[in-house]
Image (cartoon, rainbow, N blue to C red; front, side, top):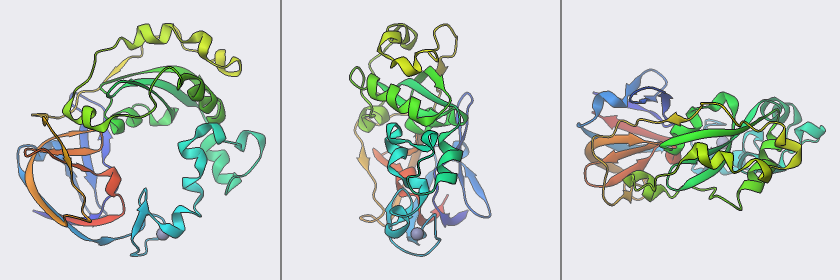
Length: 264
Ligand SMILES: [Zn+2]
């Protein structure tokens, strides 16, 4: 069976285990159903997720021009504390920014390699945690806009990592932690403006069950720019990565905007 189309991050369904779908324009692959099978991924070209032109992808699925002009990739995406829509101040497009920033946001602790802190829109729970490959996650505050989430995250960053060590995440080399106990220690670290939103007693610990038959001991990352065609036996999916038997890992999200042919 052959599929061809532009890569976008895999769609997921929370469950035991999590279900992963690679969705193309006319069809899709449920990745869980092709575990333990040989698949081939071949590079065909580029297609910007914003303008659809066949231009080289610069970052996050966007070509260079779109990356520096689209409201969807402003600095406040990666640094929520820079959000200004709650003040009525635009970065690139106030209408878009109001829509995205002025909605409930969560600051969370996730166990993905070490315990890390992060921010997500409430509507992205638990998708965001699955995409990161977190084994467990818990909400700390639920606030009405992205700015409040951002300043809370900044305050917590001095106590926790804010990035995942992807090699440890993919080899499942995770130091155990008690996220409920961690959360109880945090109330006084949360900035005063956000403290009223602190979630103390709620049984809302999420545990993620990834479809992985066998974790690799060492990983090497597949880049379609360097290796335009790769064939291997798919042993699992975690985060937005495909894990192959020989230790090769492929970051689907990191390859958004690449047009590929997949042979199963
Ligand atoms: Zn573009």
